[in-house]
Image (cartoon, rainbow, N blue to C red; front, side, top):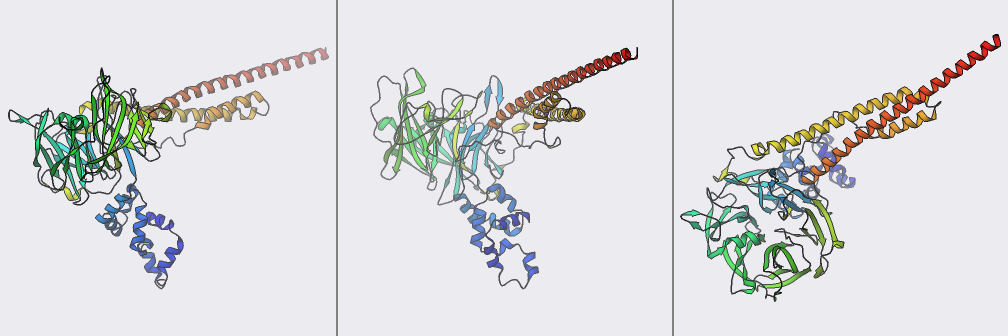
Length: 561
């Protein structure tokens, strides 16, 4: 009911008065019935549209009327259209100096501020292969793949299209949505069979498709055998119900073409690339990527250094497909001195390019105009991801949505993980132990801070009567107040918020703990020094008093003689 009162409190009062005028004859009815439910449906909808998913989930538990309203598919779709976009940076798990580091994700809002909490639905070994309407497609090393709503926490595990597929990789999967059929589809590039067994290495002749809610995967043959390595190296995007990837074509422009796969018709088409420009002879071979910028298919290309295929030189050309039927392209950007890494499938967010340099920093660069020269003056450093591997980041556009998976869970292909997964695995025991030890250090530091505060308060209280008489004591007590009591923790028993931090917040957390431990050491030293100073002052005063008393006694003795 408090949620209802809060929502009504946000409304202009004359709206509510207008709605209840004429009904005042039954005050009991108004008291028993939620005021907001007396408002027009479109007005209630406008109120709920303004609320984030987390608040709507709480509202859905207030009453049955609100639950039905918020879970209505039409409202879910409308709320999705108005949802704020985020950039999602994903860092896959891997070994660093022999130590496993879990997968992690960071959300960036339009103000380019970074999230601090880990995405709960992403397990330490999960690998991201798609983001669509608030749902994430996650590849696991078990026999299932996972579809999860990262805002609501709802998850669903699906059987993979085959068992014991050698060389299977998360980059061979993609996840898309068709705006007309309203169907979500997962696609999988199946490597050609070698000696009767799938072996995803060089070529594929089948794309396997699964529609959420169906009973099984379908095999769709490609027009010809296509390069699997090209798919892995250049990426896959889903735009407006069509999946796009690059394929080799020796007689085409740039010796490549775009292969499209319509998720509705489940049919293929080939799209020619724009006319190639002459390459520089003193540069190395050219790289190509398929990307999505502002909901449009883009082809990105640049030459590499002759003796370093990982370094890009010259110009980074970004072409946008303006008309698919006419296969008409236009050059959107021409970036000079390009970065070496182009994360996918989305690397342009709010007119800034997201990338990594040769260091472990993730940076963004402002894009203004068409001919752009990347310079450090336009660079903004976002975070340091060390010690993680360089050039291993993915970048997606995502939203927080109410899309529900319950309707798809009745299919026989849905599985329940049988073996231990995620943080329960033995490989993450050391990582979890380190986190627990870190929490213990936090608890110990809080107790130390409170203990020091209590000591400081006792010292101040003990020597407070001497401050009027001794200015030096007053100065030392002021030092204790500023050093210790000013930073006293509010509540010793208040627990830390029990959510797993992402890599950005973990680093900040360690830095803050280190700073607090350093302050504790400084406080101990300050208290000790101040107490020594006060004791010295008092001893000196007592000696002076003793000498003065002795002098007075000696003078009295002489007078008596």
